[in-house]
Length: 389
Image 1: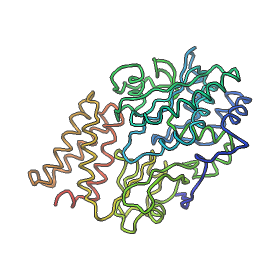
Image 2 (image 1 turned 180 degrees about the horizontal axis):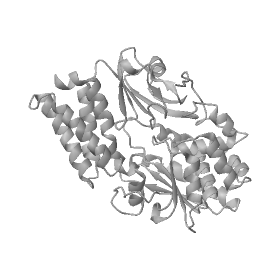
Image 3 (image 1 turned 90 degrees about the horizontal axis):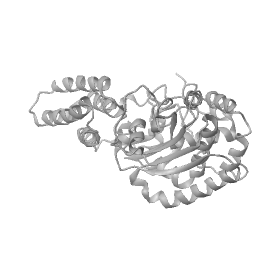
Image 4 (image 1 turned 30 degrees about the vertical axis):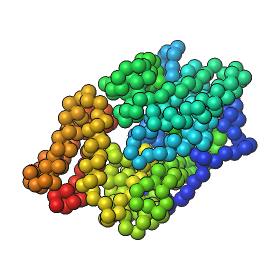
């Protein structure tokens, strides 16, 4: 398997005075929409929210829809525990996000764009609005028929799921929709919609600035480019770092661990918990373990039972309650590990709970319930003794 040594990159927060975001937009709009789509596809850029859908294909599918009204939405509902990179991007280089949205709008034929901001980030609203007003004015001066607006969420984790986000924006209860249809066909207001997360939109701006060849020279054949990671937990270097994709987890731990790391939660509460014995064999990327950016390091002083318990409390609280597998499943998993810990259930009951998570993975309506199996199975399989005793 192709690997890359851990290497720091500086694309996201870099500011090129000779190629400012608005200048990148001017240059890019000289190309045809089809040419831009081909460049995105050639770059290999996949969604940086964790799911990894090819960005160029998403734009292409939306462009091909026959509709007079289309939308571009930036998903800035950064609710995954342990992730705080988008907050920094929104604060430091929002112009790159705006530019990515404007390029996308040109490609698909949209006249309106929206940034759906996590409620806990409302302290950024004033600054964002000022910068957005300036950008919208620049678009107006160029006679570009596209405007971007801000929308604030209400603090629901499930609204990070794209269709629940649409429901919230439409003034409804934030609950996931059935799929299909997908957003490229029927998204916001049931119109064709491109929804990308903050980081993905910045990388579209960077690809248009530097070219697809330079971007895909970073990372591996399965995981092109770089990624911004939020590093927290038992680490000597907490913070935000942009690194090439495709690196072994061992390299990451050597750089950021505290010499006593026993596990890394890759991808936040809904991600996978990787134990020390698997550090060498785990690749951070789409060919290994993809991540939205959260990297939480735990050392030997931490109880993995407590970690799992916290995650299940979080999922139980944040489940929208719409579908039974998630609503009831999260509650039963939490009660189940508590019963095993107290000795009210035998250790073998953990196997029954694992089967429940697999059922949830198949039957839950959205990614919240479907992803509970990731932390549950990885922690139970690798740290069972900490749950039993």
